[in-house]
Image 1: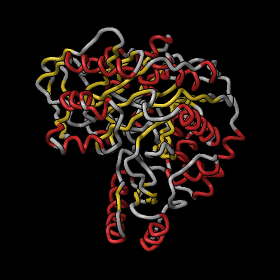
Image 2 (image 1 turned 180 degrees about the horizontal axis):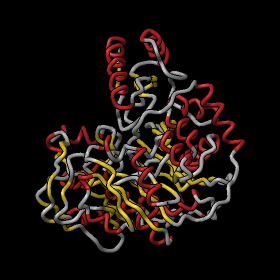
Image 3 (image 1 turned 90 degrees about the vertical axis):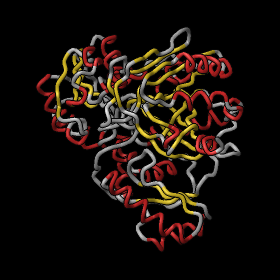
Length: 483
């Protein structure tokens, strides 16, 4: 499974050009009437590929799966109408090979490609290559992906859209002395961030000038290795923040709505582990401002498709723009359960040129939903991946329970990909009942012999600070250090 982060090199342009592109996209977006697709290739693997197959089946659309040699015997491939091998196990030779994926799409004669998340999902060049091959890319325009994928450019656009941003550099910082001057101006501690990519790569904290000079070099090196783009920028570090994001949907006819927020504060190494909606930590006034800010930003970018605008929220309740994810999120089922809206189906409909029939005033917010990620990892040993064959697999069920997974008894978790086994989501009338339901589900869940994050999740859901929502993004690390 691909990690929840961007992959692939992006062409560079000046910040001014990127902002200008955004304004022209907003003004020039033209509705294009198309027809519903007859066949879609899913350029991904694992649970998200299965999720898309199922949505397509319900829409009456044929599906084509792609797979690496490591996934050749994966059971979920049987739920696609066709399956094509695209290379060896290593992602760089299979799931990240745009040429092989497009060749498979041409041979299978598909109308569109859905990238899922991770791998090529936020690769603007891949989106361009698909459309140049007369195959629709199910996602936003390539120029929009490129603009919003550059965090420094996206921050600039946010400011122009009256969306609050964390104090920091106006764009990328090229010189160490410039970084030192900026840090002294905004005040320590500061956060160094990669301009491209995500998933916590290229992020460093500096508490003084000496650590800043060391950490900015480290951040550039890591960003260059991870994204082939070593540019970084600097922001004031918001201490003990919460991570809250807003789900948006926009069509190609100028209609944009939000589907409320998700709280993704519980993380380890900047990777989300627990997500919930609604956020238990923000007021109704903040919620309204947060959601309206997200809509203003994506409208300014000329955005269409499903997308997520991420924010950090400080202890006083003030929120600041973080980034935009131009794809479906791992945690999208949380939103689906509280709104009753199928996001994957709407991505497909929007790509086919359909207008949104949903109006903002009609978007419900029913009850509370919580998602946990079941990863094949050993939390007691630094979240070390634990690939291997699953001998026993008994997931929970019952009222208000959803489990999105491609795994089963006999399935082998590959060492080549992300360690996600599945996503367990519960829905209830309120947060208290949802927590009780999740506790019951985690007790029922049985996976052997691979180690998973289930024992850690049990501890989290029994912790008084989590129950009282007295948490921030560093909660898991502190909890584990106290053991």
